[in-house]
Image (tube, rainbow, N blue to C red):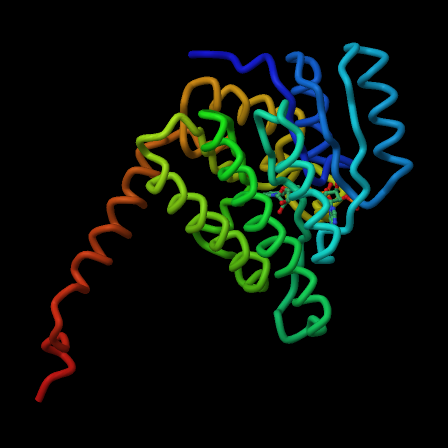
Length: 259
Ligand SMILES: NC(=O)c1ccc[n+]([C@@H]2O[C@H](COP(=O)([O-])OP(=O)(O)OC[C@H]3O[C@@H](n4cnc5c(N)ncnc54)[C@H](OP(=O)(O)O)[C@@H]3O)[C@@H](O)[C@H]2O)c1
């Protein structure tokens, strides 16, 4: 197990919840930081606190990741700051309730933040890391990417995208020195999610979620499942989906569709 303790990390969605914990725990490990979010006051407060407590260099990048121009500014930081060794794509919006109850603007914003921004930032990070000969990309998905609850179709689909995209990137970089990790938390106590009607025993603190995810990274796991005890379930999931895909390569209609 190798604990990652040095470098400079970009953390998106650092102004609250899981992203704030990444900022806090990476700063504690010794990382300098670029903190990305919309709320300037929150970022300033966090930057001041982390600098005072750990002595790290902390830079704010105020950006709205639903806007292409702002995403491009974050991409430019990744392309031009040679010290960056880790990028954590954490910023995300939750949208609960039937998709037909949401406005198209809400759906568009969801797709732009949870998918478009994550793709642009992931690719910028990987191109940079490949050129440098190393680096770590962490994409925050969700267990809802494996199977969505009813009433979460649009949000769960964005997390299924993060799962599929990140797993695909891992296979494309299997022989490289670039590390890519998918983190799939379950219910976590943050501002983004109203857990007031949920059994509190199944909700993890953001602090524990990030501590487990960083430990998972140290252990070299490609997929961090902070709250899942039985890792064999992940192996079964991967095996079943790969077997299903392989079994479709027949070129003929299945017998039940013939005659
Ligand atoms: N909490 C859970 O149960 C849970 C479970 C599984 C996965 N996740 C995932 O974990 C990640 C973090 O969520 P969280 O629970 O920590 O939520 P949170 O407390 O609401 O934090 C979301 C972060 O994303 C940022 N953000 C939202 N929209 C943005 C935008 N347009 N541009 C830039 N930044 C934006 C917010 O910053 P500003 O508002 O300041 O911009 C905030 O820092 C998300 O990807 C979420 O899907 C959460």
